[in-house]
Image 1 (cartoon, rainbow, N blue to C red):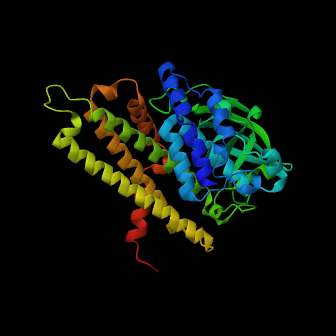
Image 2: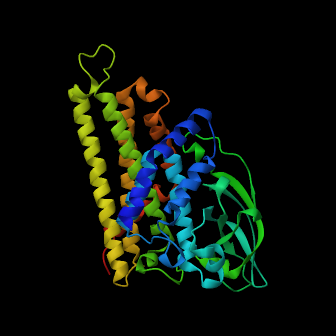
Length: 375
């Protein structure tokens, strides 16, 4: 199934690329519906979801490849897709049939958007919660069927609050069209507000969610599953930047240079070292995921050390990718400055690095793991 889904993504490359170029040219803040529909019909939104709800439930390496392929074609499409695919998989794995029969009706994985930071308050009310909150970065909101949000519960006095993720139909959410940004502009990552009653069965506890369906991969939890999408996206955007820069370097010369960029010894050295560092980081990242996947299969998917290694490898991959794209941008001169795929990669990568999942907290957690004496 992995190779089949990857081939479907490859067949859409030219369509996605054209949509990304058109969105960049017009300043559109949302993707055209025909591109979203094409990805949906190809089953790409189900890349990570359990087979029991209509998803592909691919191994992590295959998920990375699918997400990378879409992001290679265009960063905004790739970002919206991986955000929707990860959001759907949580609720497909961690909610019981009374909800998944509705959300995944007919065995179809829907298009999902939302921000799962705990920016809301969920007050127990009847058989569910009254959720109120204002959220940002709801990537894919313009075309989503379902929208989620994170919240801390407000339990009776003396009881501990829970961090829960909640899901509701798009019609119950108020969306604000404010998304004026440097990169990832066509992701429709709008702010939105929720004031809605959410049934308890449409929610789950963030830190230790129960696995109702799907394999042991889902025991890795929300953070690690989300990192899969982000790392696939990074791999794809950086690979595209490299290919575009190589094409430019082979035919363009810097002003007053005696040869094309690709023959400049300084470029060759910087290019070789930067690409090597990125590919080494990708190797570690994939290995960290494989180790975690194997541990989950053996019943140890909740080991914090697994998460720490993955998060640090993700941060390294992102930072090395950003550094590589900056080098390519500087060497390609005005060709990179103009509208085109390399400029899109440059802007999208700078936007993507701002996500908390690849933030500076991860190296500190990794240092704690490596510098703390074992008990």
